[in-house]
Amino acid sequence: MNTQTVSPICAFDIVAGQAVPVSSEWLEPFARQQNGYRWIHFDLADSGLRQWVSEQLPNIAAQALLQSETRPRCDLHEDGIILNLRGVNLNPDASPEDMVSLRLWATERTIVSARVRKVWVADSLRLKAESGTGPESVGAFLAELASGLTKRIEAVSLELEDETDSLEEVGLSGNEIKPESIARLRQTVIKLRRYISPQRDALDALSSLKSSVIHSDASVLVNETANRTRRTLEELDASRDRLTALQEQMDAEHANALARNGYLLSVVAAIFLPLGFLTGLFGVNIAGMPGLSAPFAFWALTLASVAIGIALYVVFKLSKWL
Image (cartoon, one colour):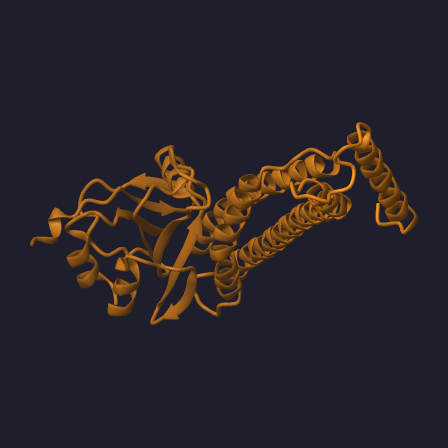
């Protein structure tokens, strides 16, 4: 397979904040340039990408870029940085918690990125570059990318927090909460948190790297983004705990309702048990039963049953069983 068959989503040379599309010879290395860097963005579905990456990138970096399943990470390798980040899924008919991944290999003069599904932050950087501007350095590019991903995660986290508030208000007002509402929201929070926790670690690692790829100014920005990610993680933890408490409250209320109903049925059974015995006893059709020839026997038995029932009710009431 010829490497020329690979086609990037976009390729730009960015020098001093000015972006210029690279329409030809984009496969040539950019390291010979004194200033600026080249950003090449790929779709992992490109059939020619594997060969090009294996020829142009260090082996470990190539493997990291081509992995089918990834988790957020940041590692220094040779003269570059291996960086995997996640963002919320803003694609049509997709769930935000079904996060999309962005794989990057960054050196002083080159950024190679790849994605499976559309990453809106990368797309916004592409549109910005098409308008002629871009981050001034590789470090600034990584900082802006991380900040954009985090901003969208924060927005989704805030929406989840608002939904949790709404469910709590419904519960406090005494209205019934649908169990599936809590289950769906908890599942969303758990899925989102699953990737944000390692992403926080990856951003912490990126901000503390000692590398010529990312300078101190960019490290400060990445560190601030890591702090925002940490706060978002804490908010998700709080939402998860609140939803757990709400579910436990619902379970407790349901258990109490069942216990009350069971207790009431037990009391009713305790009242009617002797009455049932009495009526059953007098209902046998054998000789010698008292009152068989008395015309008032039925009413006497009825009044006796009512009296016994009232007496049992009074006893239960005085005993505070009712």
